[in-house]
Image (tube, rainbow, N blue to C red; front, side, top):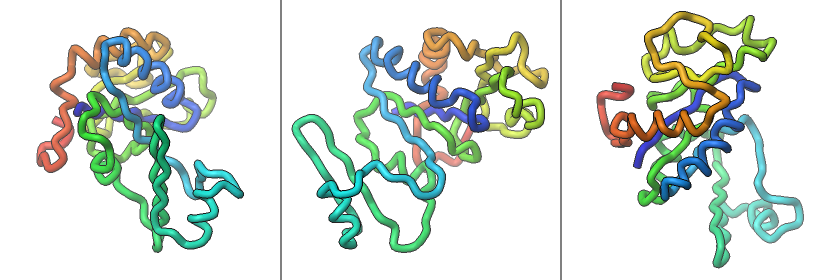
Length: 183
């Protein structure tokens, strides 16, 4: 399994890029999973549905499956934010690539998303000068905000981003207990 993170501020285009990368990777016959960091209380279930009713009744976990999909919902008895590594351990190990959105503080190799058009960006510092886990910058600007020797990818060209990922594939091999994170 290969794992790459996508880090950046809200509104930078992480979700859009990940959404565009999935079909590009699938064109290469690859199985793709996504791990996304959500903020605070979120729900994928709907009031009144059986799974919602089971969770509301106090079930710790609810698994629902059909002939087309499976979902597992787990209620934490105490507040707990799982690490990205805990979430990766929950995935089917037969996946080829995992795209991790968010978790910008993680020790995974990451691509920073930098959208120059975002007004908030003028006030926010780039992450890559201080994060050794960032291995490239994807931007819509002609130049990144801070000079860098890192590869600079075109945020608006998901095909080129996938080609770069595939060419760098070994760099993204995931070994859960590897001590040399981000190397």
